[in-house]
Image 1: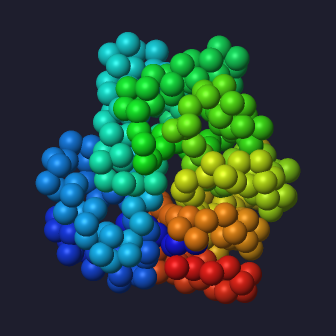
Image 2 (image 1 turned 90 degrees about the vertical axis):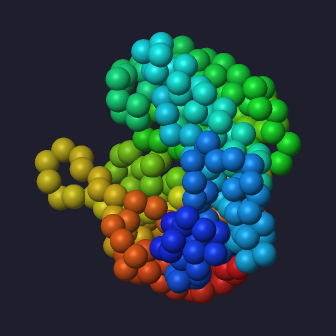
Length: 278
């Protein structure tokens, strides 16, 4: 297993990018530039990562291929194709996006998100993205989400079967699957079941934490790893046994010190769980 996150260095040069990753001991990284990078830039960063023993976990294609707005939908498709193309050029483990929303907010809830029609739309657009690029050494993935497909291991497995493309794989964000108290208090069971069903397809993971608030109705807040209720023993044990290069990527923290604290927590849990970290 590899722990990764953003670089706290001068990412405008490959040397600065690598130095910033080493400050926190990361051995996996996000792509440090956009999808429009030229071949020379892609090559020098890929070479620098290889020399430093850094795995590039993912490129991003954050957009809404299901948008009700036709222009936005076409723009999102191009973003996904370019992101997957960059992952292929760079040798990243995957390109990641969400499936998209039927509403105006690209990542928001909508009454039509979890319907058979939307499932079919997702299958169609994922096939088109993959067929446009035909990647050989990387994969297109969808991040698990609380209010859109894939929102469960069962729905992700159904998507894998329906899309029917070797280059379609899994991005695992366990916090994003926790959308009710049952999953919150029993998330270790959910994590183990997800990995049991989809483990061979997982290409990258996001590392966050979640905390339920004691106020009326349901409030679940994303918090720093180690300050919430996510069962990191279950997570690290499950994904740590899949692939020695499996990236577990910290995200959404407020600064370098928060990333240091989160990394320290994950390393402590990994040691307690006898999970080897590269």
